[in-house]
Structure formats: C-alpha cells, structure tokens
Image 1 (cartoon, rainbow, N blue to C red):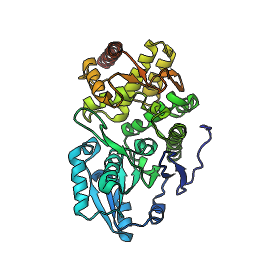
Image 2: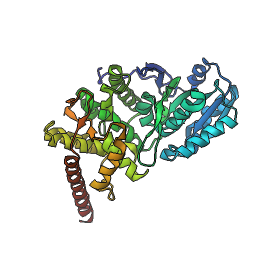
Image 3: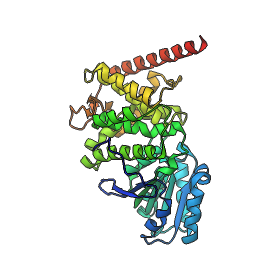
Length: 392
C-alpha cells in the first residue's frame, strides 16, 4: 500500500472494506456518515434492536443516533458500566438475564455503541444468547475503529488476568464514523495509534516511516488528517489479516508487546489504558530482542523515539509494579500458550522472529526477569531525572 497517498476526503462518503477474517464482516468507514446507518441496518430483518452504550457516550453522540433509530424501529436503550468495569462475569450475567427478560429473540440485533470494552461485552453476549444472535459494532474510539473491531474476539476478564474467557463471534457489520474521534481525549487516541505503530514494527517498515512523518505528540490533526490516519492504521492491520484470517498462525504477531502489556494493564486495574500498557510492553520486548542478539540498539531506540517523542506516550512507569509482580502476572496470563514464557519478538524492523514455526519465542524466565528489572530501573532513573529538572 502507498501510505503517502491520501484517502479521498468527502464528508458523508462511505468506504466499504472487509475484515478478511474466516467469517468476514463488512466494514463501513467514513467521516460524518451517520445519515447512512439506518439504510444499511434496514437491509436486515429483525424484530427488536437493543442499543448498548455507556452513559457519557450516549450524551455525547449516542442520543442522536438512538432517537433516529427509535423513530423507525423497536429500539431499546441499554447502559453498561464504563471501561474495563463492564468486562467481568457479573456484568455479563446481568446483561444476558436482562435481555431474556426484555424479550430478546433470535431475530433481534444488538448494537454496541462505544469503545472496545462495550464491543467486547456486547459481542460476547451476542455470541452466547441462544448460541448466537446478531450484533453490530459502532466503535467510537481510535482503538475500536482501527484495531479491536477487526478481530471478532469477544472476552471478559477473570480473577487473574485479561480476556481469559471468551469466544470468536463476528458482527453482521462494523460502522466506523471518524466524526466520533473529534472529541476523544488525546490519551485515548494514543491508545489506538500505538496499535498502528505496532503494525509498522511487526510487518511494514514503510508504514512506520509514514507514522514518523505524520505523528505529532500534541495529536494536532484536522478532521481530514485524522480520518486518513485512522484509515491507514486499519489498512495496516488488514494487510496482516489477509495473510492469516484465523489470527492463529502469522496473525499472532499482532500480539507484539501484549504479553508484557496485558500484565501491566492487569496489575494497574484500570489506572493505565490498554494502549499505554502495550507501549511499555513494546519497549520491554525491544530490549529483550536486543539482549537476545536479534535487533540493534538503534532499533530499540526507534521504539522509544516513535512512542515517546512522536506519539507522546512518555509517562512514568507505574511505581508499584516490580519485576516480580510483572513476572507473576505474565505467568498467569500465559496459560493460553502453555507453561513456558513465549513472546512475539522482532528479527528486524518490519519483520518478526520465527525460530519455532509459530512466531512465538520461548525465553528463559530468569533471563526475562533480568531484562524487566533493568527496564524498570532505567524508567525509575528517567523519572528521577525529570523530577530533578522540574525542581531545578
């Protein structure tokens, strides 16, 4: 793909893509395309629509769309807790039982209006009720529009880690309107953009070059520029999914930085976003790959430059996280791949290392712990230096 060729900018114009997965979903993309939503939904036969969102998002953008749908269809409003709070079994059970009580049927459609967590809980509910009913994703965050909705992965968290319980269930379509990104806070936008940066590191060095030229730490973008950036991040992930729609072979490279990142996010219990946790995870993964002799020091420094200088993710590492706590959290999370600690690591910029045939690298836990200890120590020293500069 030519990342320097801009998307044709026409507000109201809908671009139709595909997720390229085993069960692909139409992906409708554009800026200010709300007026086209009802006509797309009306192509499907249904009895009731359940409109799921968070209260703050409803007031910001959801009310307008909901009122339009309510005028034409039997549309019911349902609220879920904000953020990661909704990704737990008690919420899952409550939503499922509530829908049954309100007459949900195999003909009903659930709408997930919000970020990745709303999409996760609604997608999982849709996949479980009556062994599967239909749902639509309407992502309102950069993460949702450019990353989480492209994977069909629905899950809730367990007592010892993230996304331990879930399934694959595809939406009947995805509706991505970048107008919703206008008021998204900068820290939340960064959480989505970091996944695009990851895509450049793992699969396409030319995309990373484009991001280095395009990003600025203040995230000052026009509506056209932000739409173009979102579109290209989407395309960067779709290029990977085309090669492995199952995400169980080559597609596992999308987990770069996530083994460390999920553990950090879990330990912080909502005080750190998924994206910022992954940003730390990618830097630790780069340090690990360097110490294993896979990439150069310049490649490691490029991680810090793009993440901290260009994207603006340069907050201090969480003070309460130790190497021991991080290792314990990773071992708990690692149940999904076996007892060994295995990581997606770079062979070079734009390419992942594949010594074992599945793009996961087994590394001795004691070696990993030393890398984590060194990383945390370096982060503490950087924080101390910043504090000293402020005082001085």
